[in-house]
Image (tube, rainbow, N blue to C red; front, side, top):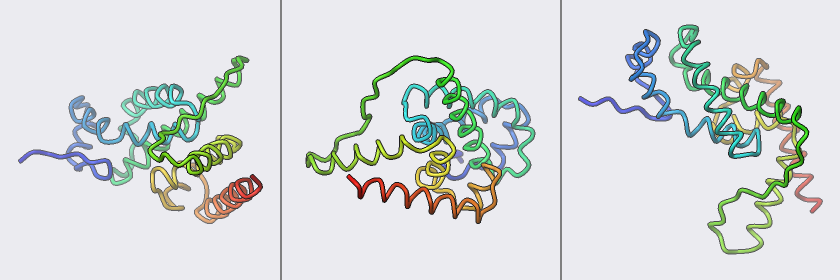
Length: 180
């Protein structure tokens, strides 16, 4: 019987093997979660290269600290929290480097309707005005699909605090988009 790793569930024996130092088992975990972590980091950093760098920086941390994972059922949340922290670090490092960059919207234009492209660009611009912490909450909710309890666990917030912050963030984005 072959073992299939998915982005939502890794078999407990694979996690246990990785905790015991099995590099092949850890590779299965990486394969299952890497793309989700990159997407989370992309939302937070707003930069595909920084997102890749943050994700790459997260994996050695995860490997080194895997033994500290208290509940294997929370592996995904634990990994996403590491990725969020690395993305925030990438933003801090970028602020320290005083280089002016011109950002080009990194949107996939599947729709040929110019109005749809404008709406996507407006949303991207509005999200970029948010703080890294706010983008972290949005990314964990809408990219990773975490609920308020999981986001709270990942970011050290209460579930009600997450819900209220998320509500304010979404309201601010809606207001920003309606102004345009």
